[in-house]
Image 1 (cartoon, each protein chain N blue to C red):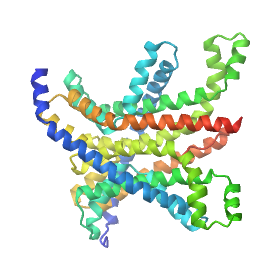
Image 2 (spheres, rainbow over the protein chains, first blue to last red):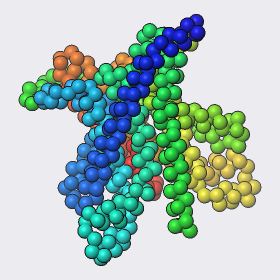
Image 3 (cartoon, helix red, strand yellow):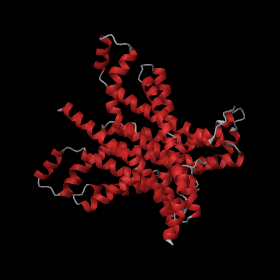
Image 4 (cartoon, rainbow over the protein chains, first blue to last red):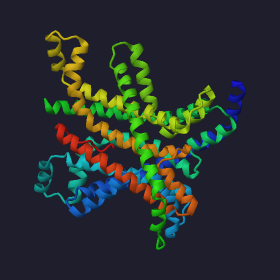
Length: 224
Length: 225
């Protein structure tokens, strides 16, 4: 019985690979876009403009306060009503990028705020332009604080990409859902799906932990 | 554009959203209580010297953290009947949420306990306290103080995660939005109302987290809610 099911599962490995490819493509593309957008928003948020800060803050709160599933439904079903035609893949990318950008914006802003003001003043005194100050003084130091949570955020992003299966994209989770209709062994099928995600996410989790340990070790030195 | 946005339909469906709101609220509370139990057990196992207890807890926590909740939910939903356990969707959903959040809560509690300085433990030992006395009278009262704000953060995550239960047709908030969207072909009305309901829960829990942090004199929760 189990042997028969395993054989049947072996038959659907091209589908599984396509699903894994879809999951990696979705999270990879929105990871890059979300990081760029998130950094831009984070820098804007700490630029000193109260108005920009509160507008971005409100948007981040709205996104953090609602389930990702609801956001996907909103984008997928409402943008067409507003006259924007889009397929499920684009909708998924938009939703994931927006989500990632909001979380990364907060991480980057917290990193920038952690840089002592003396550093900025020293840069000002040295006659660096605003752009130079950001790029050569503030961001490199902010990155040290931001990097571990940033990597942790990427893990969350990959996991959240499973939710886009709800609008019919054949990612890894959707493949599991399709296969389980044919091979009625949910434990086996979703254990394999889980292994697929684990292989992608676990190295990132380990990396985040290592970065965090290195960070706290570095901080220990400063405090002592 | 959305010029024919129908508030009248929303008002018509308000009782359904009320029920969905109540369902999301109480199923989140039940799941969170379960998650606390799972988290405490996992954390207790993880802090033991014995590898035999530590290893299963570590493996469980890593396995949960490296896989999406939706896959875990389907694992239980399609897998449990296979083992001869047939449960209603609602129970499967609560089980999945509790087992998932439990792994995160275990780490939150562990971080809280490890944040208590070594000197406290040593002072306890020097005063001749047993392990359980030290834990109960010295470490836990201090650890609970630092864990409450992140626990509320995890509660926010859990409430949002509970939206996934609509995918195994549990009647809750997101399901109410889906019903309005499909019955009347009004996705904007349905999902915007759903989102507004979640925002009420989010802002409630968030202000509770901020208040508790101020009250307990600890730093408010970070960016990972």
